[in-house]
Image 1 (cartoon, rainbow, N blue to C red):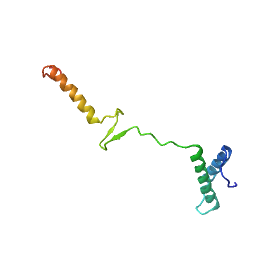
Image 2: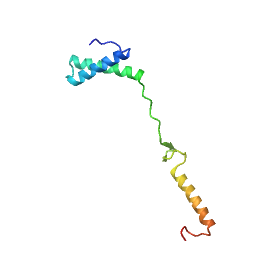
Image 3: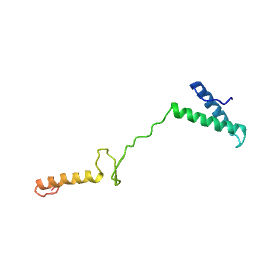
Image 4: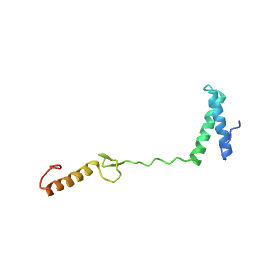
Length: 103
């Protein structure tokens, strides 16, 4: 195979087939086949980087103040949600005349 820049999809497919063939051979380091495999891998990687870019992943977990992970995505830390729960529970407890739930 002649080494040339990969400019079209057909060139890309041909290079991939040649890379696959060379990888099946598993050439020894320093042989012409190994050198050809390395060059084709670089060319394929450059073509893929240009034509098939991979977007960086968007983080699903936010980090605030370097303390806790925000698992629910509502912008509040876990301790803030717990504090809100206990405030609501405390108010209900006071309204019921300081009786625990189930009393």
